[in-house]
Image (cartoon, rainbow over all chains, first blue to last red):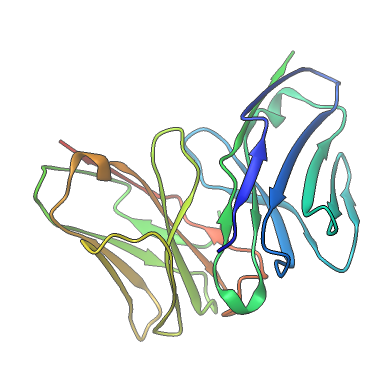
Length: 112
Length: 114
């Protein structure tokens, strides 16, 4: 089955700096890669996703890049703010397989 | 608010007991996924149902079972509970059967086994 690895497990940045979280996946058939943000004690919420037919997607301060050849994708947050502090999870799936495989999570701390 | 509801919010029970967690998906969503999140851990996929039928199984223990009813709500049954079953249990719903679509998570049920 699919194996998703996520790095780093914790990330501390100064407010205004950029943050990058990386994930690798093992199943070359995976074609959907969402990122979820989970604040303490709350539900995971989708912040951005990318499909395998594009290499990059951007939404304001958040962007995701996908390298299908290397089987890795990354989340980029620019101009970080304290409210970006949370745990971020990457995931990989493929349409006909009905399973989401989540990474182990990255705890992002943005220091004011 | 994602539109997915879960009850109860908190559950405290003793080892060896059995509990039932309930999930109502968003209106119109046919797929329900169940996840387990232990303390400071990631999301472990347990099982998925689509329109009443089991579609995919993850790392679900034999002591755990689930079903989806005709009104599309789902229940996760956990039996012979052990201390290690203490976790946050999330359900998520999506409108389609396949996994290449956003999942909307419920608020979770926090299970504590003492």
